[in-house]
Image (cartoon, rainbow, N blue to C red; front, side, top):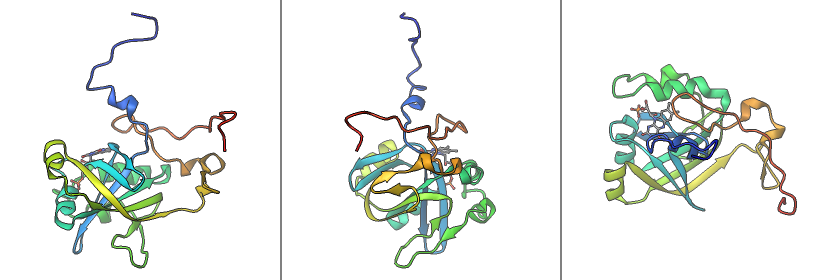
Length: 192
Ligand SMILES: Cc1cc2nc3c(=O)[nH]c(=O)nc-3n(C[C@H](O)[C@H](O)[C@H](O)COP(=O)(O)O)c2cc1C
């Protein structure tokens, strides 16, 4: 085979295509709140997001009960909290959220508390695609409300490289392997 090009197993290649940042999925029913990280999440349309939520996860039960979920975009600042939320299930640890030490912003008229240490948050209403939920654990969400940290976008453009490295969102290559965002690549003639 050509130098530098090797086969990779079909079950490993997703790690390289996993280009977006990891998200936090939050769901609640009454006072019962849970949060889990998900790397398998991506935009589906300008006003829709998708995320895989395995049927064994407690968060999934809450999403199914409430019909809504919040996706938040966490930064390197809360990597330890994120790993705690992704290594512990509320199925067996009822104090998971308190133990994670995750903190929240309360925003008027928002049905979810917004986890701190994130730079964007989208409230999504579950789209009624029960077949793909059952078959692929894939949830599609209609974005009904969204917030962002004004420090990361200026004049419509992300500003990550001008911010402290702790502001980086978290591309994930499987397990606990994350990267920080690098430098923006100039593309002459196409930069706006
Ligand atoms: C970095 C990272 C990414 C993850 N991505 C996903 C994912 O995309 N989908 C999923 O169902 N679980 C994913 N998980 C696993 C859940 O976050 C984890 O099992 C969590 O503890 C479930 O919590 P819960 O049972 O309280 O909902 C991921 C875990 C980590 C650490």
